[in-house]
Amino acid sequence: MNHNLFDTFAAKMQDRGTANFITTPEGAEYSYADALAKTERIAGALKGLGVNPGDRVAVQVDKSPEAILLYLATLRVGAVYLPLNTGYTADEIGYFLGDAEPALFVCMPASLESAKAIAAKTQCPRVETLGTKDDGSLMDAVAKAQAFTGIERRDEDDLAAILYTSGTTGRSKGAMLTHKNLRSNSKSLAEAWRFTEKDRLIHALPIFHTHGLFVACNVILTAGASLYFMSKFDVDTIITAMAEGTSLMGVPTFYTRLLQDDRLTPELTANMRLFTSGSAPLTAETHQQFEQRTGHAILERYGMTETNMNTSNPYDGDRIAGTVGMPLPGAEIRITDPVTDTHAPLPQGEIGMLEVCGPNVFKGYWRMPEKTKAELLEDGFFVTGDLALIDERGYVQIVGRDKDLVISGGFNVYPKEVEQIIDALPEVSESAVIGVPHPDFGEGVTAVVVLLPGQKLNESDVIKSLSGHLAKYKQPKRVFFVDALPRNTMGKVQKKQLRDEYKDIYSDA
Ligand code: AMP
Image (cartoon, rainbow, N blue to C red; front, top):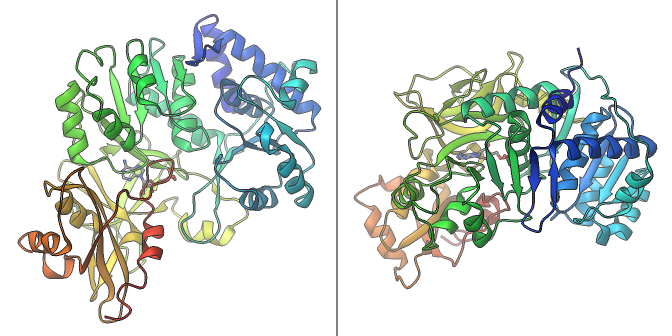
């Protein structure tokens, strides 16, 4: 049996024939049959360029249907797809090419010169370009290539992709994802979220990240549904697309942005059956406001690059704001003691390290055996680095990253608990709580606050209003006001950046 993930997709693509697979607002369109035929030609070109099974194909390109077809063709030839954030600089690309040693680097046409220079330094043998209009040197090669109609044989534990983690400390790590990892997760998600051939997913996420690439595209391919493929998030385009769309997969900022638009009503979203959120915490407030405005309860799920998706709120049943739901079929979760490092499970309801096991969990970090050993335990559980608890109904609540935990005067302060109370102040839009070095306490609890437009509040107002709600050691010692919190493309607040910025504030205390 061929365990190549593309084998599963190809059967579905064949079956769907002339049904629509992908459409863009600009008018590009592929039926499933056209898409399948094009993967044969791209696969032929990849073979002609010397890409063999097991080779890495590194790709830093803007979003387009052809970029997805390149991903599929890479699987088809048994190679390992390695997408790179379009925001990475030449230096960063140098690190990734040096580390992953791809057989081919596909870059944006505008960065060809710098890509060639980096490739020469890192001994990457081939560089091709891919533009957003079915253009670039790779597509020239495709036009001349002989189609490859086979599907290279792969075992279930062979690599399908390497995704580098964003890495808040040290170098990024390449998470090795197998055909089994991706297949099992897309099947679980398609079933859990009831995706069928009738679905049309509004796709506004980047495709260099697990959310936009695997959660979104693999689920659609598994179900034989269709994609409305936007080059980037844009409120107007999403609002227009909702008339024919059935679902949207978003990061929390998609929903806060949509809520700012008066056109968001139950009528506008009448054709939609599912809104999901993930990659960063969705506030209970956003969840509730969205439900009030549209009648739809956003379904929040939790996952990460290394593990694919682990938990989801139920499709039928209560979608509880502030929780990420229950383990997906096949995924097993435990909450363990983060202090002793024994990985001993804690009693239900206690906050600890979230560990996960299952066919969704990756194979390890590329060429980092020590890091792999430290985080992927012998019993198969992966130490996620997320602190969480499981409530009495079995729903998981993520409390924050282990690295973001503040330890002040020897006491643990979970930033989320403090943030929730600050966010509930009527003048506040959002906040981030961080720990920065403090001469007496080790770390000082520090709040960075964004006010709602036109609102006024000062540092002592915030501290005073928290005093009845939080123990003294949890109260911020300092409060700073900013116009916006720093976020990455997936909507995650960049706490490391904030810690760097405020690192000296207590040095004279
Ligand atoms: P990434 O590997 O970029 O997908 O980031 C994974 C991390 O994002 C997880 O380890 C969590 O810290 C965070 N994350 C993902 N989904 C959620 C969620 N629904 N709520 C809170 N944090 C989340």
